Amino acid sequence: MSWIQIKIGCCRADSETIEATLLATGALSITLQDAADQPILEPAVGETPLWDACLVTGLYTTQIDREYVDAYVKTQHDGIELSWEKLAEKQWTDIWKQDFFPLRCGERLWICPSWRSPPDASKVNLILDPGMAFGTGSHPTTFMCLQWLDGQSLSQKTVIDYGCGSGILGIAALLLGASYVIAVDNDPQALAATRSNAERNSIPESNLQCYLPHELPKNSSAQVVLANILAAPLIALAPQLTAMTTNSGALCLSGILNEQIDTVCAAYSSDFSFYTPKMSADWAQLHGHKRLT
View 1 (cartoon, rainbow, N blue to C red):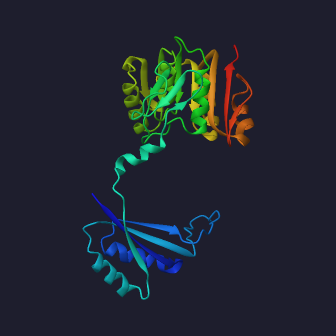
View 2: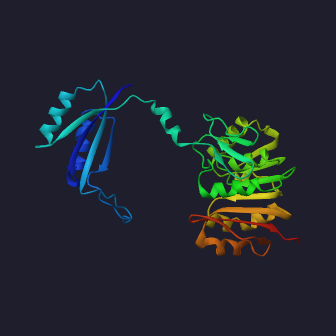
């Protein structure tokens, strides 16, 4: 389908009524943009600030009667200036894919979208497309966990991925040699995404089991426990994640801001010895091993 758009410059006070006018003429969507390169600083709670000078854009199909729209807009808004432009034909459902490329996560592991060929077929290539569940590998918290997994000896080990999202960490662990993964998330959509991504990567169902937190079998444990969530739930889950980690087992925690490192470490320090935190931008990853009890 072909598309055209109308552009109207206006002041902030008129933007809402112009938006309503365009919608009344059949506009399918409205976009408001800054017309004068004016920065907007952090707004107060409940505020939706706009620029002093706005550019209002309305999107239509090419079947729209432009003369009718022009006439209607001008009767509603005296002295208004408007212009039309045709949008170039594009496959809009696929254009977003241009921003995703294979991502190297260490010496062995690559994360590859399905529409791009893996750069090195001899490496461990995890096929993953962006979706509703969090985790494509590009965010620093996930990327640091993937790098950590790439450097671990996972052969024949059981891994718990707590807060699995897309399943990227658990699936990476299996592809890197782990024998069994327990994936846990409080979002059923995340568990569905994990199962789908595991199937896409030819992971047998018997090697990866998904659970909502309240469904997780009692006494579940693993030699490697991963949790890429946020500081507050990591602290709240400390007793549970500690119990799940076997003696001398490895723990990897992420989703932590740099200033939260000490607080999260303190929740686990009675049972774990941590190594130097890894940091990327504002984010940190903690990893350590459980001391013998």
